[in-house]
Length: 228
View 1 (tube, rainbow, N blue to C red):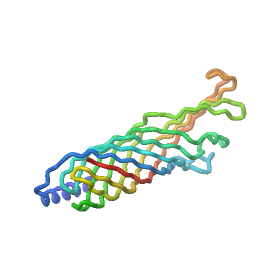
View 2: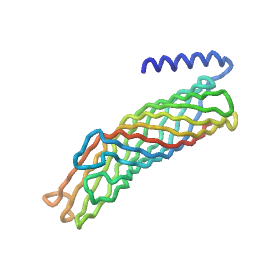
View 3: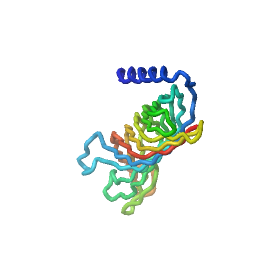
View 4: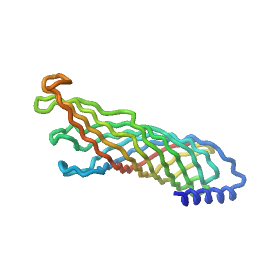
């Protein structure tokens, strides 16, 4: 990591010297992404044949960037991540209510490299930060005449991504971009199920079971965005 930082600093300094007439400026960057996420458990559960969990995702990002020269920009970003679980992986084989929703807010540092000082240019970018959970999924199920109160949560965890694409300058202070991205996150998926036999939420007629799994989340998708 130290060597990578030194390399980035060297390239940034070299390019800055080659662009003496360039004046650093700040830009507002917005993008939207759609993705598929494969979640892999870091534990092995003998009760399940499949240790993978599938998600579909949407994300929105705002990134504030300082452009140091025509090629390099650094900054920080935030946004919203929304994952919907589409895999039936839980405490019961007969539970088909798999569409559980998880919302989080990330905070991260961002580095972007625009390869050409032209109107149209390829670019690469990377981010590193932390993803904060802000919601949990709660719902009620009725299975074989019994009532179940279920709460599912996907915890906060580290976040890292890399993306590439094409950036097009439409005007002097407006640009659009598009391209694929890959994102890695860590988190704990916790599923708590309370079963009521008589409608009560406590006592001998109410039982609680829970399961927690640490996950590697591998997300791949497409982003489109604009900047000014």
